Image (cartoon, rainbow, N blue to C red; front, side, top):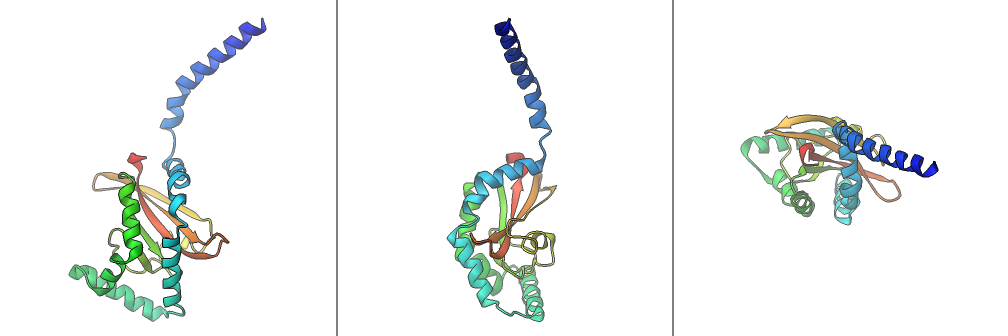
Length: 193
């Protein structure tokens, strides 16, 4: 009797997993998929020396930066963007961190659409694609990560961009001792996960 009951339970479990398995996958949210990708991929390079050193250096360079200096830098970036480039944009797009980030993006096989990194006041440090502004500190991507904790993750809603469903995920960038340095935002092609 026990062996018949055991066989019956195994059969029920197999049928249940084959029937319910696709349903569970179909109802999985974009947040679940992105969290898995963060754990299996992004965490591998989010505390790399390249990333931490670049942010740390910019934090030192901008120590005690005034809000009027931040505004001037942001306005300069926006003017250069309208003109198609300039020294400020070139200094960020051409730095070692941006080259490192472009390598990460290329190695993602189309999952990552963009990466940009911000310092402890929300200014761009490095990026793969050009951002519209230099100052990100007034946006949720920085406020819901860097300002919250060393382990904060903010996953935004999915939006269609050029026919691709993209969600921006932002994370605090911190040292192993949880000292916060800045934040980064990664565009994720949700359909490629």
